[in-house]
Length: 254
Image (cartoon, rainbow, N blue to C red):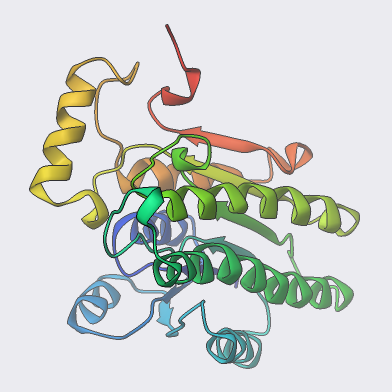
């Protein structure tokens, strides 16, 4: 039984990824900072899915997550680093607080790095055990904010740019083990994070004004399909690559 862990997967992009991997036949592990009715509702819909809570910004929580995976499942075939936070308050970078910077970076960048480290060591151990049908991989979810300036949420942009380098570093280090590492870079996706009326109206206007070559919002299903593709093994020789799922935003057309 192949095991896939998707962090931050109780809603939004993470849930879209989880459902795609579930459809591909993986036993999926949903993970979020806390259990609630929404989590249970989603678990009720999925036949082969477990739940393990984790706050990836916390060392002991990360450790407990992987101890449970090793004990209960004995392997990890896919890690999708999706968990992330946005600033609680958008502020001009000249007024960004250290508290907000630490809050965002501790989850998005530090958390992603050390979850990847734990997963990589578990995957290497699995390869050494010669587990059956075992082709592990890591996929990091970044954002167009990794290369696009938003001066009212600088800490978020910095954190996502860091994920791009984390992808390259782990792709380089794990290549000798045959463990590919990829980055999926979503664009403007319709989720809770973009769900406020003001934000939604802003992006509606931008999309209608020609911001995207493909003039529509992205969906969690779009991101899930991209992750599914990267789990087929057909792109493993392209380790370290970025797959842009952004309606063509990255083209930077004139």
